[in-house]
Image (cartoon, rainbow, N blue to C red; front, side, top):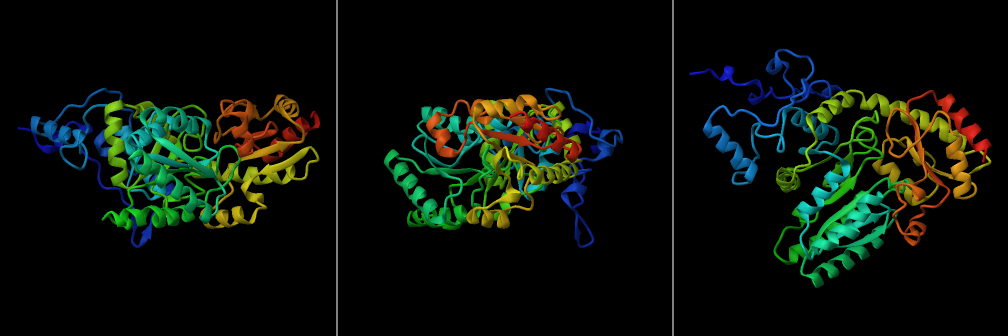
Length: 447
């Protein structure tokens, strides 16, 4: 007979995370140092080891059966233990607990990339005949997956501009509801991206929540359901501002989506993604992830745990740098305009920013006077800033979306969304702000 303390360390659960000292609620920055991890379960190691294994030993046959009942959905609540690395693992579980903390979510799920998170989410929650309502622009791969691939499974879409008013949102939801009825389905998901990639346009999450509850909740109530338990979740890609400068779940979203490659990873050395929200939305996605795979690997999860410890510091420094750089660029004679949240001129966008955001971020669009040739000259003249796609790293990056990340978007669609040939996307890093200003100044001088 073995005592419970003799169980393999991977099968013992860590102590509950301490979230308060007295009446004081601990901040996410503090919780990143230890949430979800008990050093005593890993030989006293201060930091979580990397668990490189494909499978985990069960403490008993009955425990194995119990875990698989959770994995297969025969019992609610999930595995409640470690089973197989396609389903879960210690590094991934610690990561998911810490990701949920930042957004105040019930649960989080990690994936091998942001696009894996998005595609599994959509496949899990949509059926043939359903309609997805999405804002525009979206990241090109997200928009392409909805338009080109979900359609193969009988899922259609309706889109609306990021800055839409409540009346416009009502109208697009009515259109989607009629389209779904004609196809024998439902409006399965509202998918937002705010700020939008690459224009930085903001979506009014609160207005969409109210429109959803009114237009779709009314129809659901008429069918005998509950308008307060709407079957159409609002999911939002929060990559540009999260997790520091916007908490969408506080403003009416149900699911928050991240490319963890960006600010959370923050060092341009990994690729991963996540979603977070209430358990009712996470469970079907988890079930499909169990089948398809797509969970991030232990090494990536371990690196993300490292990165989460400094995400607030890195994002704060990058945000301060961006404010200084944009103040310089705003006055430059070769700059046509800036898509920077700190300098919003549109009243509608200002209102959304005031209600939803706690900071302007460090990724923005820079409009060079001229066209593609002038933008290319600027990009090719940069010395400190690197000419590369992606964003949210410690280094400053610059790219031309119309010719790179959004090249596959039809020209008519790009024109409609404001993705022009002179729009340069800048992601400011944590270098010295004055050095970055000097670099941008000399590069603009060669345009």
